[in-house]
Image 1 (tube, rainbow, N blue to C red):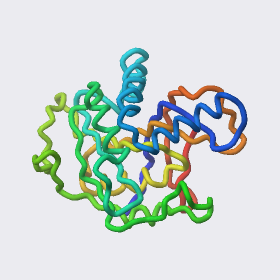
Image 2: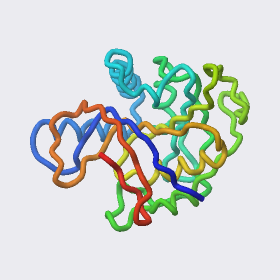
Image 3: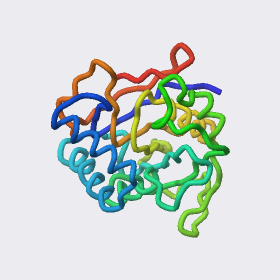
Image 4: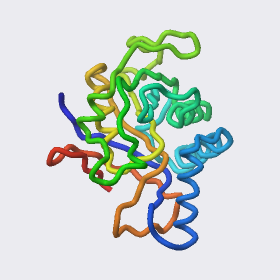
Length: 225
């Protein structure tokens, strides 16, 4: 098992605490996202597309040769329309990727981070133990390791994990490690729609595209920025 540095991108930001209209806007966006509102996800995916197509952002996370891998929630059995899966499909529909592979699953449930105290949230190792990569099916079509995606000459398989929110990056780092085991030659990156700001960070705007890195340091995930 090896936790490599994981490059990630995010489009929006919010802060759990703080007062003022922009903070309220961010928390409202987070609440709508967590509810997996089917009317909201296409609009949010369109905003990501505007940043990618109009401003040239997220060039490695998305593209015609990219396969999106949605990150499952904390439960072992996912609901029919969970946020990661719905968001990945919407991102594909707006042309930001070639396919969606729902090949990542939970072997067993973990504590839900949103309702756990900071010191009680699942660790990277707990997330890693709960994840598995399997040959699943999507819409009746088998998902196998030989990709039907036509890659540019000289390039390899590009996989982008898709999640709703990134805080420290523990979930994404663990999921990336599992994907890298299954696809050793693949380039694995991550995209989270919403980035949580930490204590002491000021939220200046909710639409705040960002690219950074999650590293394995001191037996935990460290996100920068």
